[in-house]
Length: 198
Image (cartoon, helix red, strand yellow):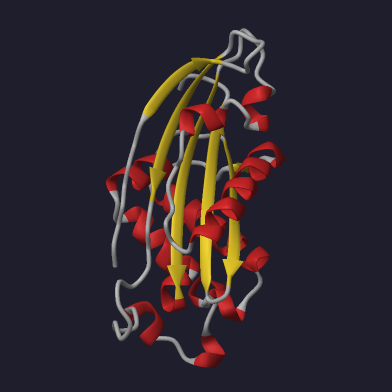
C-alpha cells in the first residue's frame, strides 16, 4: 500500500469580492495495492460473506451512497474516541467534495489536490463567507481498489497518516464525504469546514 500525504496552510481573502480570510488545510491519501497478488487485509479476512458490514464491503458490492455513509460513520467514531463532536452535514461542502471526487476518479489513482488554495475560492462553503466571519476548510483524498476500497481501509489509511489524522481530528464543525466509483475502484474526498478560528 502506498501512502501519499501533503499538508498545507493557506490564507487568502475570499470569496473574491469579500475580505473574509480562509485557511485551507489539505491532505491526500492513496490507498491501493501496488501490485496484483497482495494479501487481503486482515479486517476483510476475518469477515464471512453473510456477516460483512458496510464498513468492510468493497465498492463493487455497495452503492457509492452507502460507501460515503459508512466512511462518515467511521470518521465520527474516530472523533468520538478523542472526545470530539461528530461533524454536521454541509450541503455546501458536499458540492465541492463531489466535484473533486468526480474529477479525480477519471485519473485512475493519480490523485492530488491540484491548486487547493485556488480551488477553495470556488467552494460554496467559502463563497458564503461574510467579511467579518472567516471560514476554514480542509480536504482528505483517498483511493482504493478491491479490498482496499472498503470504507474501513480508506479511514484506517487516513488515520495511519499524520496529515490526514490531523485533518480528521481538528476542531471542525462541518463535514462532507463523497465516494465516486469507477469499476472496482473508489475515489473518496472528505471536505471539512468551520466558521471560526478555533
